[in-house]
Length: 241
Ligand code: ADE
Image 1: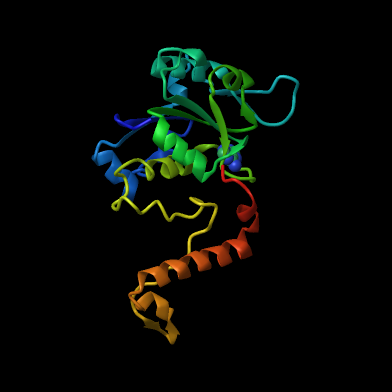
Image 2 (image 1 turned 120 degrees about the horizontal axis):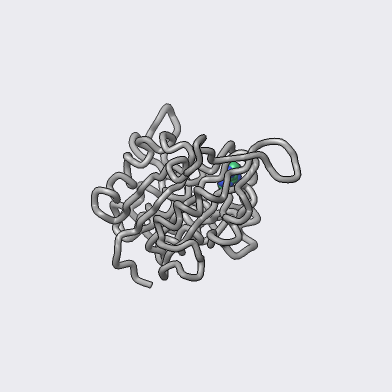
């Protein structure tokens, strides 16, 4: 699908202040100003209707911690998407739940979202978890950003948003900037150098000063391979994604 509309990203969180200014720098700020992306933050608490405005409660069956309640999240999705039935979402709409239990988010998934979605609602998980009925009824994709446990999905929502937005057409300064990113071809990126040529006796490799673009490309590919072999050898033996 060729993107022809702005990408809308709505983030549901119990800590809206977490996102103050975080999307107001660099590529994301530019993309917002250029009308490539719109990012809205929603306070889950504002969708509660009870006297105490409770967003969480104790888990059925006992155990530590609190569980985010389904009700305000259903109400938020209903308001934002007009329905809380996954089958009725508009084409190109995704509802993402960020938890450590999700599929690990990869560059290929960022690319797919950048190319094919028009509206992403991200739900930031918290505490011991989120009432499973949210996952069963509302969520199209459950993502983790890695095999470690954060105190909530908020940092993950920032990571996923950044990875997607920078891949939107025209978001990067140069059309080709994302082509050589790490992971794009199951390879880590090659090393880079800038001025000065001699920094405290450490010299920039001659080939980069040679002006021979074929040789430079060869060197970069070789260094990318060496780095990947050393740091992430498993990338060389599998499909990305
Ligand atoms: N919430 C807590 N840990 C997380 C992780 N690793 N990825 C996404 N959301 C999370």
